[in-house]
Length: 80
Image (cartoon, rainbow, N blue to C red; front, side, top):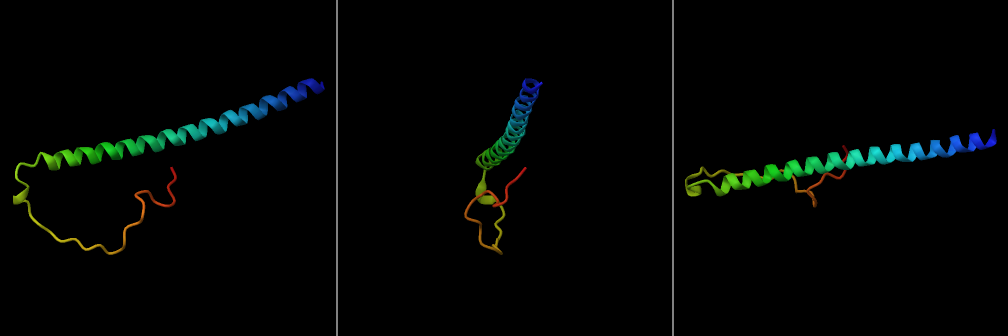
């Protein structure tokens, strides 16, 4: 009976470890997909700017930054 109890305990610990691994892998995959989408959208916008036939005729505008930019492109509390 003790052997069965120990086997169940060992399998339970292994299943918990695998479960946390699955959660962490899913989170990392989601983060990677979001970053890939952002990169592709940025590349598409850059290509659109490069393909603009006459950039000199575009309207000029002004932009005033209301707050200083953060030191990194990622927010400090980045969680998905």
